[in-house]
Image (cartoon, rainbow, N blue to C red; front, side, top):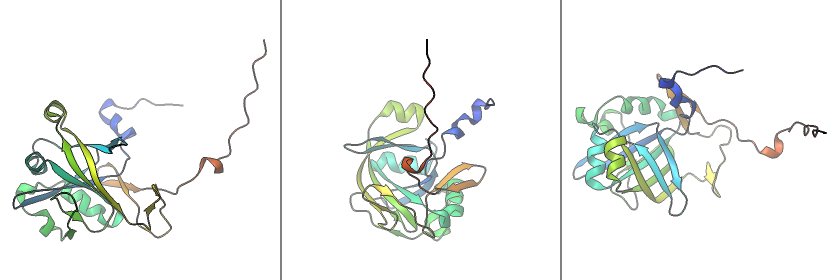
Length: 197
């Protein structure tokens, strides 16, 4: 059975990758915003994409500095994630307003946020057409970090009681990453009988 989905809501069928907090800095300004639309793009060198609206302070800082960080928040930061996503950095310092603590990145000037389960330091790959027309930024990941209790040997392994990445659905609703399973654990149906002519 299937039901038509309103095309204005169709993005939600794919919109359950981890929500990220985009941190940026240039000169004496810094900002943080939430983004539900980000994704990996390439392996070697690693690249990502993220949508950053042209009307945001983050966009201004990213275009000036050529870099940003993607911070992957956990459930404890869900309320903050929604709040920074609904408030402009032009209205005040969101780091101070929401008591966000940060630490220095290794290869970029944007701050990294405490309380996250992963961090990607990114340098913009200039693609003016995509940026101007679609607000889409492509960036190379120049450093990446994760808590080894949650990510090691190239895999997430969220243990019971440990923080998990959060995923924005809509209207202030998130869900956490669920339990991992292997295809070896899945009971496959028996193969269909071959057609005989």
